[in-house]
Length: 136
Image (tube, rainbow, N blue to C red):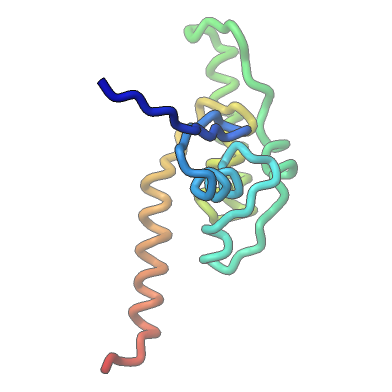
């Protein structure tokens, strides 16, 4: 039998676990639960990263112990969707929007991060291909 002791690193913000310190340091810097995160997508898009406090303030307080069949739940969902529309006016960065949603603990917004990120990356790749001046 072999036994091996390993050192495990855990993100202070989202509790993700990794086994390499540099990888965890990079993750924590960009973690969507980090209130002081640096957004790599904003940097790539050459956008200004808005303060997370401004973005999370748009969302209503999360509801606790609610009955999903009540009108209160419907009102909450509508408020979340309206806040998401306002946030999309402020920034087009999918990672910043996801960060605001996660940090405000909003569960019902209808936001599709994967789809939005795919659209952003398609546009970035299209721009890069258009600016490519030729190869060899």
